[in-house]
Length: 277
Ligand code: ARG
Image (cartoon, rainbow, N blue to C red; front, side, top):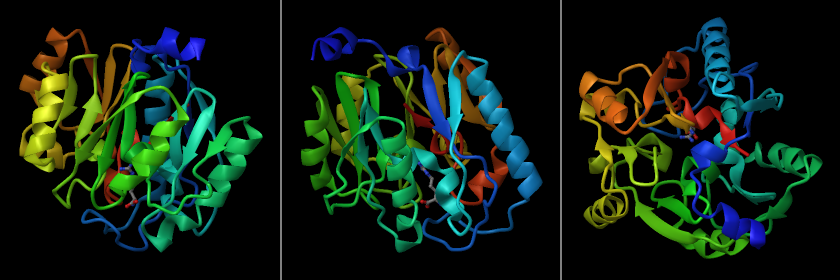
């Protein structure tokens, strides 16, 4: 508990030491469970893009651990959906779609092997981990719900630590996970796409993060919000416009763009490929 209090006000992007990634050994688009899915993946290109992202993260001084992808589980590259981490605890995901439930046991195995205390494995409400929930500091959980995660699951998730939970209602099917339209940047700001949220949630986000930067529809569609903030870098897919870049600069952040074209054929990009540990 002491540890919890000490870290309560530090941003996750500052504290981040390690992440988990899954190299796209068997990445394809074989089914469609979100509106973006379709097209043929160029596997070599996907591997190069994944390596570029890994390097961009390592360049900020973060260690990247890897887990092998299992054949027949094409979306396992989006490991951010495996659960949410709080210190040495993980609250495990329960996927909405049967196409992804096969991933769960592999994640559980990895978390056990790596010494995490397991929560949520006996709970039946849908929850898609870091895709829908993220800490901007360890005192506050941004808790998305809508097409994938059930709102009620947060009654359980919130028990794994000492933090406040802010429920965020997603209303636009194109932005089916919180991380497709919201990326915490600092204690006072996120990069976000307001129309993806209910009015009440928009108000709450602005109240708590008054310096937030709203992206336009074109940027949102380029998945610019599916970014990951590490130290003073916002690592995002290509498509950040000058106004957004300038706004981030004023807050002291630099944009690092990585081409994510192959993963966007599955409705994912930078943030989806990375689980913060
Ligand atoms: N095809 C995957 C799905 O629909 C993409 C997941 C993207 N992950 C994310 N955290 N947004 O589940």
